[in-house]
Structures are given as structure tokens and as C-alpha cells.
Amino acid sequence: MKVDIQDVNSVTKNVTVTFPKDDVENGLKAELQKIAKVAQIKGFRKGKAPFSMVEKLYMPEAMERYADKVIKESLKSIVEENNFDLATTPLLKDQKFSEDGFLFDVMLELHPRVELKNYKGLTFYKKKVSVTNEDVDAEVKILINKYVEYVNKGEDAVCEDKDVVDVYINRFSVNGEEKGANFHETIDLSKGETFSDIKAALIGSKVGEKKEVVIKYPEDLQDKNLASKEGFVSLEVKGIKKPAYPSNEELAEKEGFKTFEELTNSIKEKINSRKTKDVEKDFKTEVFNILAKENPFEVPASLVNNLAIKMAEDLYNAYKRYGLAPEQLNFDWNVVVEKYIPEAENSLKQQYLIRAIREAENIDVTEEEVEEKLTELLQGFPDMEKVKYLNNHKLRESFHLDLLNKKVFDFILSQNSVVEE
Image (tube, rainbow, N blue to C red):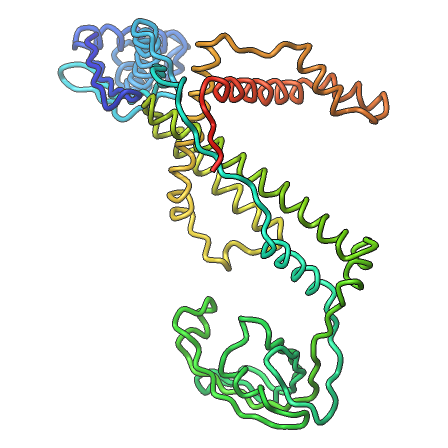
């Protein structure tokens, strides 16, 4: 057996293994002899057929058996002898029999060996968390819109750009093709999705007015059945409503607060909490990005791609949970997966760095620490529920990993400077 190992990069090897003609012939003969013992060929008792006939009928099976056997055995030997730490299942690229013997090519992806050279004495920059009046105003506006009510403006009222209009569609067509007639439609002029041609026709109109509107649908319209086409609508204004917003005091009462000041203070706390979480998440990501640059290493491409696919699947499922149809959103798997490649690579590098630092600094988490954290989180739970969670093996593993990652990150921060800016 001849083995040729070529480095594609630091974590990828191309391995070509060749077996000489004599070894292959002996191997195939051995496989055929095994088959001959159990072969049932018409006209002969089981295992009694001439070897030449067995060879003629069963050579393809013998070749398959031989290839499977030598590939498995030789790969095991190569991995052990070279101390390869496989990250993925070996990928068989080619195998073939020839007059010279048997050859196969395989690609091996290995876990990276992270050489920690510079992970202490660095400076990390972290954003300061601040809540502005604009932040609070934006949240208040959302709450106000939550409780908005619409009241009739009366028969002589004029339609304005924030109104909701009840119209009766007499006729609707696209490129001259009839699409519908004689139905009611409610149009909220404050919404951005209202076509500008419709909006322009309605503003200034009164109840009872009739309008005929030509609609120029834009080229980039999501509905491809309408994009770049021309629509025609004949309609009549049946009613006009205007938005009525709650006062600050009414809003506070609806949200369960005594005063508007109490409400805004609560909003500030929630925004601060949300921003703090976002800043901490971004800061942690940036810390590990810096460590990865200071201690460069490569990660297996297959692991990166698989994680990017998992991220795309999570996004797809999130759309479905929120009642959105990914197909209607033009969800392109290839584009989404490609977008997640950098994030997936950074995430994997973070995991490898955590493991390397943990091993270098002998950082670990004891079962007592896991027990203590679980007990703390389960305070107030019924005793039976506590026992169930405390004995949940997967839950304990998850907590062990979370605590371990936190310990490593806390250690990193203790060995470096953090500047808020």
C-alpha cells in the first residue's frame, strides 16, 4: 500500500492510496473464496460450484467487498498513524480498479490545532449603553398606535393622508383583463404599501365621490402578477375615518401605570435592558473576532457550510412560526446560506478558541457549581418539578457548557483591558 498525503490547507488533507496489482489479485481471490462457500448457483449444491464460475458471476460483488474493506482498514490506519483529529466523516472522492491495481482518493477534514500566542494584555472596546429621548418616544409611539381608534369624520369631511377610507370597488382590471367587481375595500392611507396613484386620488375626496384611477405598478413589485403592469380601478368613497389617539394619561392607564412618568421610566428600563443584551452580545462576538485575528487558524469548510445551513433553516422556521410564508418572501436558500457563511465561521472559531483557552488554563466547572446554578434558577418550583429538572441529563449538560463558556469569557476579560466608549 502506498499513501500520498497532500495538504489542501491546515485542516484539509487529500489522501491518495494505491494498492499494487498482486495485492489486489490476492485480495479479490480471498473475497471470491468467501463467496464461493455460500454461493448458490443453479445446477450445483451450495458452495460446490467451480471457482471459475463463481469468479465470472460474482467478481463485481468481490470488487465491491474488497474496496469497502481496504478503504475502511487503510483509513483507520492512516488516521491513527498520523494522529489526525477528524472533524467530519472522510469524503471518498474517487475509487477505481485498473491493470495496475486499486486506487482511491479521499478528503479528510481535521479539527484545527489552535496555537495560543496572544490572548492576554489586549485592549477591547465596548460601547456604552445609553437610552435617548428619541428611543423612548419611538416606543411610546408604538404603544399609542396599539390603542388607536378610528372615528367617522362625517358626510362633509375631506379625506386626508392619515385617514382610513371605506371604498366600494365597482370595477378592477389589470392590462384590460377584468379582475373583480362590486366589493368593499378598506384603505389605510397612513400605510406605506398603499399605491401612490390610489392615495393621490383619494386625498381631498368626500363621501359619495366616485373616482377612476389608473395604477402604474412598479417593476420591483413583489407580486409578479402585477409588476410593470397597468391597473384600472373604478371606485366610490363610502366612508372616511380619522385616527383618535389616547392621551399620555390614558395611555399610562391602559398599560397599567398610575402616571405617564411611571410608564416612561418602565420603557427606559426595558430599552436599557434590551440594549445592554445587544451590546454584550456584540462585544463578546468582537472579543473573539479579535482573538481569532491575534491567533489565526482555519476551520473545516464543511463545518462552516453545515452551520450556515442550520442558521438558514432556523430563519426559515422562524418565518413560518410568525405566520410568514418563506416562499412568498422569495426565500433563496443559496443566497441565505451564503450570507450566513461569515457568521458561521466566526461562531466555530469562537468555540475552538474557548476550548483552547479552557485547556491551556485548566478551566472547568464542577457538578456542585451546576447543581448550585440549577437550584438557584428553580427557586419557587414545586419539589417534584425540581427533582425532574435536577435529574435531567441533557439540561445539566447544557448548563455545564453555559457555565464553562462564561468562566472562559470571564477569564479572558480578567486578563485584558476593557474600555467603554
